[in-house]
Length: 280
Image (cartoon, rainbow, N blue to C red; front, side, top):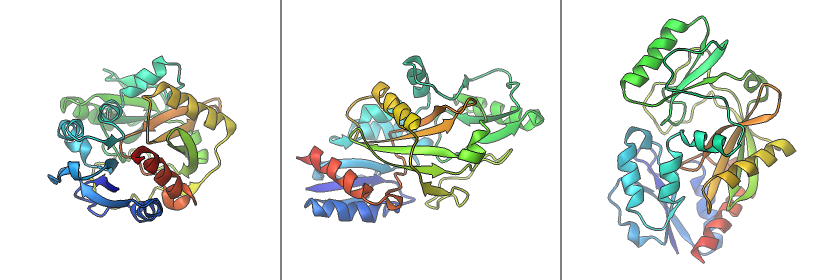
């Protein structure tokens, strides 16, 4: 069967995961090709459309969601994309009892935390995200005011010091089953807002290595997925150590996350098998 791997114009050949995924799908007798999501392609010509690298959606969210709504046989589904592309989904998960990084939504005043992060609720790749200290109230205030003036929902979260030593743990699941995990090193230096337009280049500051999650991290990731929409082809659960050392949820990536297939032997085969099950 024929599979479209949805990407964006800045990455027309897909990301670094595409070649290994294409090879793994061929084992099941399926063909895969990268297709730019807004290229006007005939999506009915494909048996499945797998959303992977549509990284410019943050600049054209409603257009992207309209495309998703009008594209059949999409994984993950259009309703999942609509829920997950706005980080206000974290409020739903917190209400379900998931421990989430504390978040102020559209605050009028800056917090009194020693360090904190300001970012928009619709964002990817740390775009328009910055880390500030208590002594940087003027530029932090300007950052907050600019995002609000643009009509964007603003999130303010404490900067958790443990990320500097432990980093983030990203746990990847296919069809609800744990596949692999990686450690993501911190990329936000103080005052380091990322403002550039999305490109096909990876952020060289981001160091990624395989990691075995702790039992507590694995248990929390499963709790997160239990509170999320069902029937997910893929999910990435990004966790940080909280102030007491227990893991807390930073983000649940269901729309277009990097899956780090090249850093986890066998993971491309596991994703290909999950795709093949849907096609069968």
